[in-house]
Each structure stands twice: as C-alpha cells, then as structure tokens.
Amino acid sequence: MQSADIQVDVVIPTQTKYLDLIGSIGERIGRELDHYSGDRDALAYQLNLVLTEATTNAIKHSNYKGPKDCVRITIHIQEDELDIKVFDHGQGFDIESVPIPDFDNPKENGMGIYFIKTLMDSVTYTRMEEVNVLEIKKSLR
Image (cartoon, rainbow, N blue to C red; front, side, top):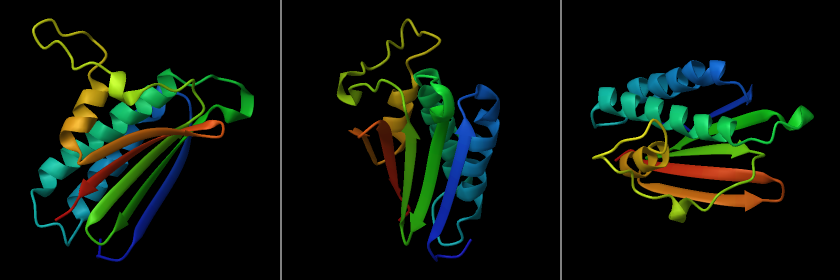
C-alpha cells in the first residue's frame, strides 16, 4: 500500500462468524503499509486483535432490532495515522468506567477494551443520535 489515503468500509451482520474476516482485514493492512517503518508483523497482530475485540463488543452489545442488525467498521489511513471506527446500535457504555482486568484471576471476557487501550494511541467512545462510535487511533510514525 502506498502512502496515499486509504479508506476501508465494511458492514457486517451482527454475527460472530464474520470476526475472522474483520481481523484478517486489519492484519493484511498492517503487513502491507509500505511507509510504516515499525514492525509490520507486530502491527498486523495488533490490528487483528483490536478489530476483532472491538467488533466482538459491538456484536455482543447490539440490540438486534431488524435492519439495524449490523456493525459498520471503517479504517482510514491518512499519511502517518490509522483511524478505526466501529459503529453499532447497542445500548452503549462508559468507556472510562471499564475496570482494568484482574490478571491474577482472569475472566473469559472483559479484556478487550484493556487490550485496545494498551495497543493503540487513542480510544474514544461516543454516542451520535442512535449510533455508538468507538474510535481508535494509532500513529504510524
């Protein structure tokens, strides 16, 4: 991929069978960013994990109400920044109130937001009209 703007826009049903697809898109992007001078394998792994976790949360917490039963994921690469947005129609949550996981007694769930915040540079969560937006940014410098 060249340093030109890249925009990927994916809309999937709220079904977990599409998680591998979303993760592999992130992984492929991480491996093919020509202008990224860091460890591409590490970036590919991180993007796979972050996209899979964010999409899992969006699917798990969606409202399942007819035609809104979808999750939209946008990935925008502009110069030296990667911007991911995950849109869903769930009830929403306060991202700042999500506790740090108890690593001494790990649970099967509850780690996703922690991993996303740890691996990426900026994570925000807002509600716009009837849509929740998880925005994740990563510097590519």
